[in-house]
Each structure stands twice: as C-alpha cells, then as structure tokens.
Image: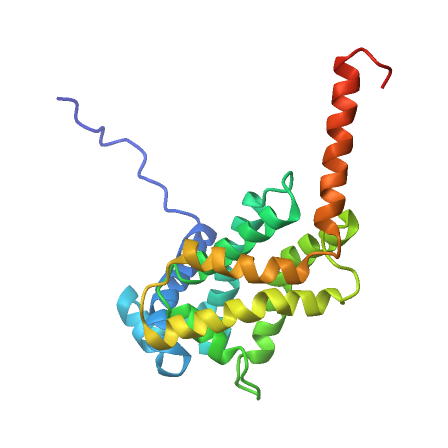
Length: 238
C-alpha cells in the first residue's frame, strides 16, 4: 500500500471568502428553518447560532440583527419562487395557460416550507414602524409581482385580457383570492389540494380578466387560419 510522502505538501485551507460564503449560506438555511417554525417575533439569533454550533457573535459578523437576517431569508425565498416562475412560464401558450402556471406555482411554492414562511410574510408584510418588516418586504413583493404584471400586459397587447381596467387592479384581482386561500391554510393548518384549488380559481378569475369578445375573436382567428391552410392545401395562392 502506498503511504503518503512525508514531503507531500499539506492541504491548502479554503480561502476566507469561500468560508464566509458557506457560513452565510448556513446561517440563511437555518434562519429559514427557525423563522418558519417560530415566526418573526419568537425567532432568535441565539437559537440560530445554537443550531449551527457557532456563537451568536458570529451571526452578527454577517448580519446586523434579526431584522436584516429575516429580510434576507425572505428575499432569497422570493428569488427562488421568481426564478421558478420565470423559468417555467409557458410563454408560447395562451394567456390563460400562463396564468394557470403562475397561480399553481405561487400556491405550491408558498406552501412548500409548510405554512411557516407563508404566515410570516402575510402577517409581517403588513406591519409598520421602525423595527417592522413591512417596509423591508415591500420591494420584494413588487419584484415578485413583476412577472404577473408582465403576463397581464402581454395579454392586453394580444387582446386576450381586458384593457378597461388598470393593470394594478387586475394584479390585485389575481393575488387577492390567493392570499385569502393562503391565510385559510395558515389558520386551519390543513393540507391544500393545489390542483383542485387552481382549477376553481381559474374558473372564477379568467372570465373576469378576459377581454370582451376575446373568445369570439380567438374563434375567428382560428377559422381564418384553417381557411388559409385549406387554400394552401388546394394549391390556391396564399
């Protein structure tokens, strides 16, 4: 068996920056667990440090306090949801199919961690004051709703979504019922059948969002496409 040479160079220690990045990831991972389980008020940086086997002072090396840490945890969570929506959104399909994907992804990912982070965002997102999180969450929520606003705007441009109502009200029409459903899930602590819920929501929401006569216009476009295809098949000039 070959033995390592006594003259072999010792392993190099990982760069301080890499260690710091890993430490931040660990704090955020455990921070997410603690905030999910305890909520903002009862979560402590002491417990987060204890679970990681580090000192609380180490947590404060990277985050100035609980508020900043919680904001970063929620921000990263929003980033994951936004990335999932933007990566999976079926832009090649009609607006209804895209909206269905958005609603389904929103509900599914908001409940992935149980109802803990969901409850924290719904409750603390409304809080105001120097130490409250409402103001800190506001930019995150605006960034989160940007894909929905883009989806609705493209639907208006294509004639599928009504133009007589401002986009911000259409956004509220979509997000309001979902927030109510999430609150019910938080308060009742029972599983949500996401697929069934999405079907019900779309059955109510899309007729309210749809432009007047949009379905008739879509049928006319389809008829025109079919007639054009038949003429081409018969050798008629296109």
